[in-house]
Image 1: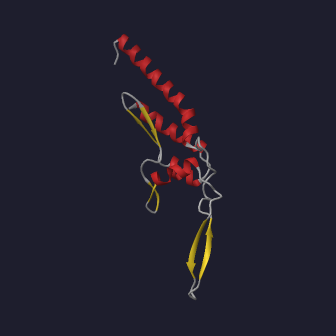
Image 2 (image 1 turned 30 degrees about the vertical axis):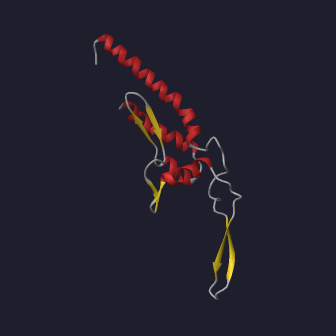
Image 3 (image 1 turned 90 degrees about the vertical axis):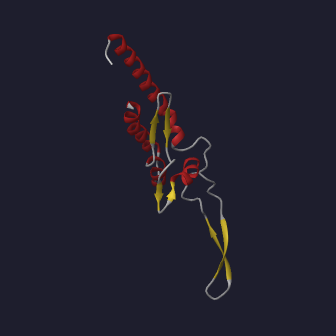
Length: 137
């Protein structure tokens, strides 16, 4: 329980330091949480919650974390008011960062945070054993 209480604000702070865009803050930082059991600690972000207007954070997690091909262009055929058609070109990935296999926010933050949370667990185990030897609970 102590891990969740102490870990959640630190995990959120670590993600916030790594995030640079508003979309990253909404999708990843805004949904960050720490789940702890007697066996492990799970760091999570973008698993639950909605970002805006019913868009699920989980649907945006991969493009926001790993980026997208920003040169990708989509072309649509549109009908004009006078009945003719014309092509419209859209750059649909401009709001995302460039593709990066190692991630932009979650994975770099995890690499920095895991040693800290492991240290907290080790200190907790040592303290619990020391209290048990002293007869305190």
